[in-house]
Length: 382
Image 1 (tube, rainbow, N blue to C red):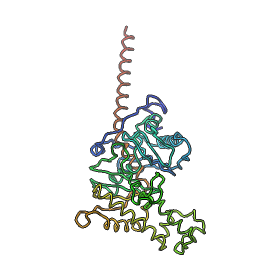
Image 2: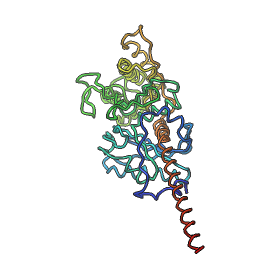
Image 3: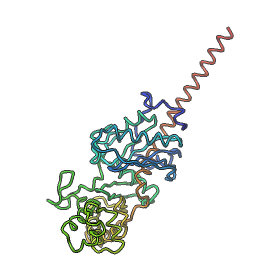
Image 4: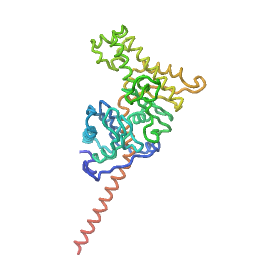
């Protein structure tokens, strides 16, 4: 049984502490945050990953399960999170839980306003989980948590102005300035994937046309490959043979693998995706002027097959090219665990408040015991 279960209210207790998240002074706070284990949760459309992370970003233990079907109620996903946290807490002294959710999170980091791959609509996720887990819970967008992890422990260390772009099924993003995550007035900054780059272009699930993620994402990569294969294009014979004619079996990792083996079409598709990536990065540089772009997400596994063309396109499309410093474009270092690690590290900021609250509860209990003992002694003396 973990220590925090011994000293806090029972699971589900109404008296469990529900603590407000920290303000914007994250940079100073993380230097003085308690060096205690915390749990990070990364919730995506297909998986829920949970891990215990120490103060140096090391993963002490990790669990993974499939995300419950999105047609089910939000409580089903919350139940999955609670089960993972309680499982980990049996073996670790957990002081706080951080959630990186694939969706829009409000400025108070309590409600998931909208999650495209889950049935969360204005869901008070933080308060619901905190009441069930009896430890502080912090909720943030998964791209924000991944960017925080890369700034603290990965490719973004030492950078004061950093933009992270996560390439997966779609495109997510985050902005860090002077060690602070910039979430915007309403908490939904960094949704770069829905910048319009081709007016009247491909329809996006968000409802608009021509969004950036329709041209530079895992979905875009797979869509182009499947269209060529369905048209029985001569350039697609290699991948058609690889999937034995089952076009629906074509995946992003498969395209990357074939490109590494020299398949011309797969290499060309990654170059196209990379060029669109570079165009979007140039637009972001014009607006935000960061010193570094960190490229993460599953598609970034293609490495220079993708990032090389992105750097070339960035240089061609950068406003004022030749007369201004150019931001670095680097691949993320922490891989698929970045969101989980960042969520756990951000949660450490509220763990300090939990430790203080727990200490006050213990002190109050000890004072009461001393008072009760004094009363008993007085009665006995009479």
